[in-house]
Amino acid sequence: MKKKIVAVLIIALVCSVSAFAAGSKKATDRHGKDFGLGLNLGYPGVGLAFRYHDDNVRVLGAAAFSYMGSAIAIDATGEYIFATVENDKHESIIDFSAGLGLGVDIPFSGSPSLAFEAGLIANYDFEKVPLSIFARILYRPTLHFGDPLTMEWFGLAGSLGITYNFNLNKK
Image (cartoon, rainbow, N blue to C red):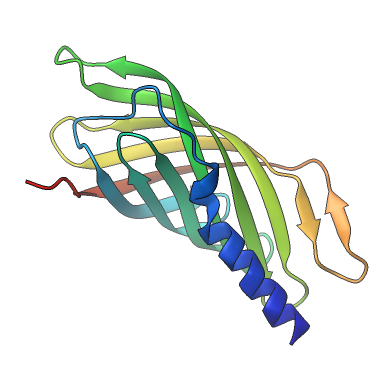
């Protein structure tokens, strides 16, 4: 029962990761406000990638099967875009961001863990179709809720992914 309560609390923390997202220097792109779904490869595993992006915030994350830890893993990172590359129409094509977030691993056997994430993200938006590809590298110290409670201070992770973006702009 205690493990289930801890797992629910960790998932609630991951879902509230957008509180870490900072305002963006120039986050508008040719797609405007959007929500994306797609494929994630790498950390936290093979699975679903998701993204929310508008003028002031972008949240990027994944829900996946962690093949390294035999676990279901969820993570999300709120991002601050600090540099963009624009096309001739002054639309952002490639952006680079820094982000903070949380990740949780819920193993099939054993105790869950909570990771605190700091990352660098590169994102490319295709010009003709609402697709984006991303690459990210994360520093992630991890708290393991076992007996005893332990902290792993050094951890690196990376992932590549693609999302199909649904336009959320009101017409």
